[in-house]
Length: 392
Ligand SMILES: Cc1cc2nc3c(=O)[nH]c(=O)nc-3n(C[C@H](O)[C@H](O)[C@H](O)COP(=O)(O)OP(=O)(O)OC[C@H]3O[C@@H](n4cnc5c(N)ncnc54)[C@H](O)[C@@H]3O)c2cc1C
Image (cartoon, rainbow, N blue to C red; front, side, top):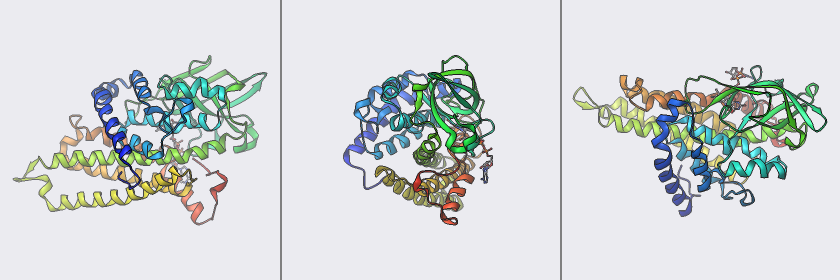
């Protein structure tokens, strides 16, 4: 996105990142998509460049940059034609590690956050359960205090980076009878005794490992509690605004890539003695997509400004996620149509984008949940300044 906030330094950063992606990531995408596994060396390379700690303090190895660098990061990663790769990176930097930075003890930051920023450890966030997705309060995984440990029992599902990741920021019930006040966050190591993980086969995001997790009497040191017991729900609802904004940026950038790719195709494909791009109905369809994208982008840019000022923008981030993810699905649906039968083959990358973009309206709070939040604010005058944004 082009915002007047971007300086020469931001543009240089974009170029550096773009060059890195072309050299170190793009050549491996096909392989990672096919294997369903990202070579973890890439995180180390990205860590060495500072890309995994853009908005983290220097004390922990971060670069302490403003949010526009993160906006650029989300956009550029989304242009590499693999939603799976992009989401794995976004989950690490914007959807899981922030809980460690904001609420983790210094010991946890040293042991886990620093290595994440260096690209040595992969983090995940484990909230969703087989019986509780949108309604986070209904989670059933328990953590019962026993001496210096918690004993964790339960299961999670759809966890991005859940199979090859190293640890999970896990939502657990420490006081099951206290509703949202009984939820806490625990850092659970992937290799702890009693943790099992199975990969889930998915429609898209093939490069990314999505897992169901089992916790069978997993002993977790109490020192791995993140923040205060019983505050987990507040922490999660706070964190979801950043998650939704980065998801919105990702959706729009994916649609941008699809549109550029499609423009290239229709400028070359001959039908009835003309290029596809010469038919007026198609030109208008493209123009409408450009117009829709431009207005949504302007709104998402405004949300980036709010994020950069650290403002707690529940309504804005919900609108951004809703509009951007729904629009991206519509745009890529139209793009695939313009490829004709070739769009339905694996010979063209539009097929992958079509599969990958679909989940945008589901993850990090579905479109229905975004509408619920916006309706509560608009109709019921709910004030989320207390940092609790209801359901996921
Ligand atoms: C590929 C992938 C990766 C994911 N990664 C992660 C991750 O890393 N960590 C994690 O914790 N979770 C992750 N998720 C889970 C994701 O956040 C949930 O799938 C999502 O929140 C929806 O929950 P659910 O699937 O249980 O659907 P449900 O909550 O069962 O919803 C079913 C349907 O009911 C609708 N609905 C629910 N409530 C309402 C309402 N009040 N009004 C109207 N309609 C409603 C929903 O919109 C949906 O259409 C991932 C999911 C996928 C598919």
